[in-house]
Image 1 (cartoon, helix red, strand yellow):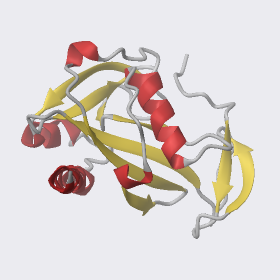
Image 2 (image 1 turned 135 degrees about the horizontal axis):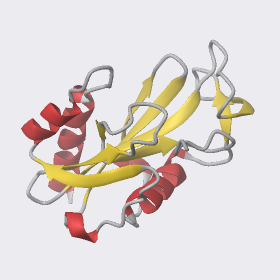
Image 3 (image 1 turned 60 degrees about the horizontal axis):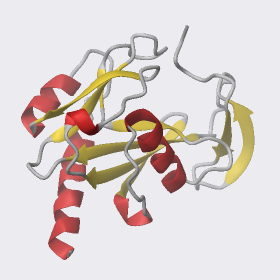
Length: 175
């Protein structure tokens, strides 16, 4: 059974991020319309990045390594609320999420991806993973993370990972 919740509802947006409707996830998004997705890279104090290995039951890219956490924004949610929900559901990580944690809005063919960056002192053993969505998590050096993310047909997130690292460094330097 697929881990994806095809019956959930999404808000649908135009390119200017104005809400134009709502639909179920199983329905195709119309040309010129978008649904929202949140993704994050989570770093530890040593500069390693957490990656997750997707569940073998996922419809898209089963068992592939992916960013630290991510998922769809459901109807009525903001991107910050969705990011908090995804971190709590998938990792058991309850960090505050603010607009300042969001470093990129990236449009694609039928979705807009909101990228976040966080730092935590949690070890791999501290996470409580949602086994319906992912198999495991592990910390990697940035170079090893890039190697794990370079899989056939899957976004390697090269620019997103570098921008997330830069974003975390900037935030740490201003604290």
